[in-house]
Image (cartoon, rainbow, N blue to C red; front, side, top):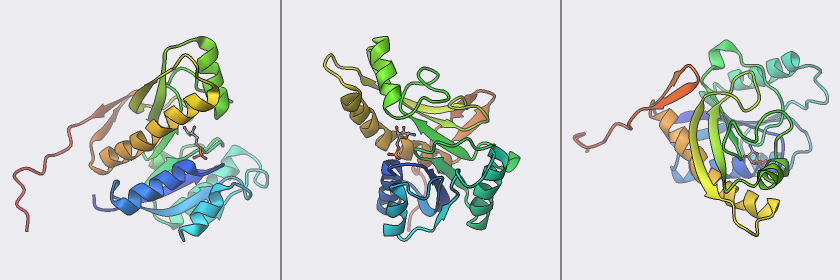
Length: 216
Ligand code: GRF
């Protein structure tokens, strides 16, 4: 596959969107962000899409009643922009998964799933729960999205230490720095055709080497 057409779904600050835009611009991912869908008309991330000249479709969950109607409106936008892969980026709404999008929607979560995930577990709540549990490592998870919150097949995970003096904010910052590396890596693997879903597991196939390919 050449350039992926990436659709990014946001609800909040859009820091993940900014990272994906950076990765697309620098060639860190073989993708073009061709659409941003926001579930809030007042999400600060909407401005990031506008600043980058990326088409923005707002499907405000307060105007559209019910998961099915909301999901239909989101897919209408994704279809219109012929999106290959969807990256949820701080997206806080339930999306029902249309059959032709199974295995084409990713999410990133700021913990080592299946721990500290599920409904209501987002933002600082995740890091507060991690600190309260007293675990010594945390991290982030990129996974394919299915009908359940934070429960789809796991693509990649990465660990960070939990330090003695951590606050939810300091831990969140360490995890987020790792997210900025991990999400592009998962997208590169997808683009290279290296992710195979086998039930709940994702087999990560070796990236074909360029050795032996004659250039020029
Ligand atoms: C991060 O915690 C990420 O893991 C989760 O949303 C947060 C980022 O939101 N999916 P945003 O990109 O700052 O809006």
